[in-house]
Image (cartoon, rainbow, N blue to C red; front, side, top):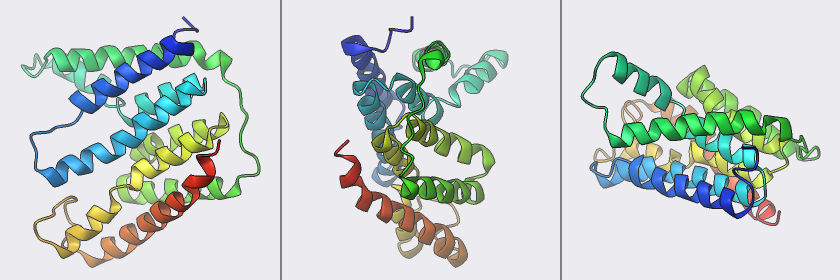
Length: 223
C-alpha cells in the first residue's frame, strides 16, 4: 500500500482525482464570477498535488487534496446518512470514497515522510506565518489550519513550489473580492461590497500575499 502513489501509478491516480475534482467538485450552474471564484483555488491545489506527486512527495499530494478540497466531505456524508437525506448520490459517495482513500494513504505513507525543509527560505516561512494570521482573522481558526497546514507540510517536505501554490490558492480570489466593493454586480463575498474596513484590511493583506507570492513564483519554478 505504501507504493500506491509512487511512480507512474501514483501520478495517474493523482491525475484522476484531480480531473474528478475539477469536474465534479465545482458548481458550474452558478454565474460566471462565482465559477471563477470556486475554480481558481482548486486549480492551484490540484496543480500543487500533481507536481508534488511527480517529485515523489506523495504525502504532500495527499494532504493537499484532503485538507484543501475534501476536508468537509466526511462530516457531510455522515450527516446525510444519519438524517436519511435524499442528497446522497453517486457524486457524494465518490467524494466520500476519495476522502477515505486519502486518509488511508496519508497514514500509510507517514512513516516514509522525510523532513527536508528549506531552512534558508525565511521569506516563505514569513509568508506562511502572515497567511495563518490572515486566514485566522478572516475565516476563523479551523479554516486557517485547513489552508496553511498543507503548505507547511509541503515546506517541511522540501517542496517550496507546492507550498507557495497552496498559499496562493487561499488568496488568488482577493482581487475579485476587492472588485466586489466597487461593482454591485460582483458579489463574491458577502459584506465586502458594503464595508470599507474589511476591504482595506483583508483586501490589503490578501493582495500583499498574492503579489509577493506571484513575484516569488519564478524562483520556485526552478526547483
